Length: 98
Image (tube, rainbow, N blue to C red; front, side):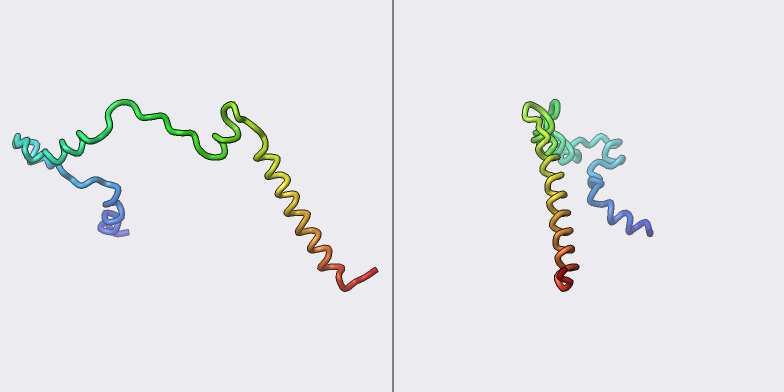
């Protein structure tokens, strides 16, 4: 791939260059106001604990631990397989009465 194509694809991941080496070495603090404003709005302190979501958190972790999803999955697979086998059996024998 060409360098410009890679640069264009990664432009959404890489933040824009706000502070350049010339601004930092010249000692002009007024040019860094956008950078200071951005970082002052970021949350400070430890991150909040993520809320437990999903099937694993709902059925397998904590006080509500249960094997019901596994049992339901096994029964659903059995039911689907039985239905397919039954339909194939009827299609195979419908014109061949014994």
